[in-house]
Amino acid sequence: MKVLITGANGFLGSHIVEKALSKNHDTTAIIREGSDISNLAEIDGYQRISLNYSSVDSITNGLNELPEQDLIIHNAGLVKSYTLEKYLKVNVELTARLIQGIKESSAAGLNTKFAYISSLAAKGPVGNGGPASNYGISKLKAEEVVTNSGLNWMIFRPTGIYGARDVQFVPLIKAVKLGLYPLMTSPKHQMTLINAADVAENVIDCSFSHNRQIVHLEDGSVYEHKDLKRILEKVLDKKSLNLKVSPPIVKAVLYLSDIIDRTFDRTPKLSLEHYSEISQDWDHDFSEERKSIPLTINIPLADGFQEAYDYYHQNDLI
Image (cartoon, rainbow, N blue to C red; front, top):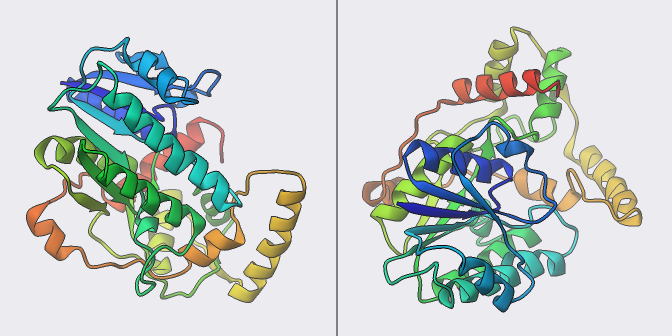
């Protein structure tokens, strides 16, 4: 099978490339010119092309260099910004141009599948009734573009993704290594997670076995802080004390941080909006969905964090 992946040099994208190759698919990675490809440095056997996303014509011309694909996975997107406008420009408008370019190119045939990597943020936290952030709003709008595309689409909504090559958990692991576990939300905060390799596994397999479905991706467990603390302590062989920071203090600090980042036009590492979103509960019940679309989960949380820690250590990140 021929598999084409946008955003292939990103954290999740690199895992999708790696998983597609492990399944013996003819894999092509789309990379923006000048992009950092360090996530792909140790992966061999894939083809790489550059694509100009600025217009439908440039996308079509780039894709016309490729043979007909069996699966096109659209993983490229914007995950951090301060404005809805920027999110819409990348996550919605770029997706619309890409789809039109695909339809006009030789890379798509009648049986080509199109998989869009959305986010659980498009559904929003439990009880919210929809997205709780501009990012989530943009992902939901992008999903509408996909469902109206006429393609053989699949939409995937992963929850919080972790694993090797990701750096979002580096500050937490550094803190536990120092003997402290930062507790910045309720101790009973309900969280869900999934390893990047398991996301990649299910995106590829479900795309070939299902059609025109929205699939929510999580590892089947609900976690509280005590669970993450116990696992990280085991990985690091280090006991830690809870460092409780009340949400009002966190919000005040992030409010000031947002002002500074906006002033210097910097991409936020953690914005107030994002904190307000992720600090809510995410323990959705997908049991009915699992009856018709079962998932393959190979990596338990403890093993996944061990792999992530080994990667951080090998790359001098901790």
